[in-house]
Length: 338
Image (cartoon, rainbow, N blue to C red; front, side, top):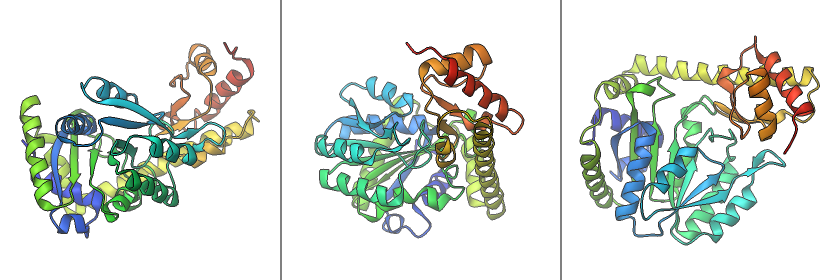
């Protein structure tokens, strides 16, 4: 029910670090999940059944749409948003975020994007993470990390996992919902890992036992094929290095895409400041475009993006960046706001 242990052990070390005290003290347990989505569903089900604290699930505004869908479909859980994105600065609204976490009920569950925030691409700095952890500690909140893009934010696994390790070093109990869909190209294999870090080894293993019972009631056993591939990549030294090099190249490629679009926007003198495109991390950019502007780009120029203004940077190339920038220029000048 727990999946391939050579995979889950390696996945846990990848997140918490090879020398993690949590691992050394046997306070970290993990099971294989159906990618990151499955890990989140298992976490929410576990929280509903066994978490003794508040059943409010605090999620950033905005966030990945599936967070709300999953919480809303599980009776007993309450979906609550906290401030995250500041449209004025196009950065993290740390003041608003800390205020909302402070005002939330004690012991709430806080869903945190560990890195490469989806959809904004905006991540807190380490000093900001320290402030967030301080508020969570004060309010006795339970952190639930969504980790879908390890390596895509900075190209460095340790740096991208630094937020989680900060909470581990501060003595939090927490969960991590980890996906290998994007970072290993195993989207259709549905490979993920749910990690729980407890105060003691006894607590951690009791929780793992209950999580396995939840797995048994849903799908009994996870698929083996993708887990064996992931395990080989994580545990074989040569394969691990090749995989890390591939992730670094993917990160570098996305950074180049950001530069292509930013340069094209500046060259065309598109109104506005576009430096946030360079400052954001990961696969997505929150452009700041309005719904009407996005609709014009889709209908007139066939440049497809979410109507929230989120665009996938992976679709930007050196060849099409000027076309996309021109479409954005037209939309900003000519879209009719409702």
